[in-house]
Length: 162
Image (cartoon, rainbow, N blue to C red; front, side, top):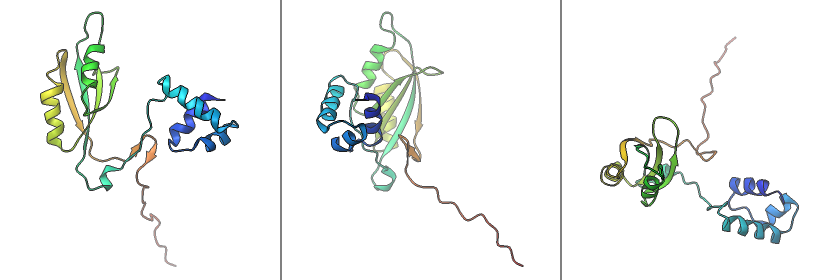
């Protein structure tokens, strides 16, 4: 079985059935199920995600990306700081980056106040954090390769009269 093709198919459609995967990969559904279980146990597949357009729900929702500058620690580098940041339930993703900041921290909150309180009371005081820059999400256009709304273009043709 082509494991990379299996992973790409699951990444594109997490709800695809084992039988549909088996048909696409020319194997049995049992082989697909066993492969998925092995990949989950090996932490290659770490979860399945639903993409939600929060703007259409009417619910209060505030996402932010926070750039975090930090000072590495002897023998552990940035790992201890990353571990402390990752434990907060507000943090949805955390990346060590190259560039002007060490970390990109993605968080979800209900309001801008909740996001700012998280930064001020939880994130910024962590030992080793030297600066933060908070970028609030204003609108979602595309998430994980999926357009949320098709662009509607006005007819740009001009009427030509004889």
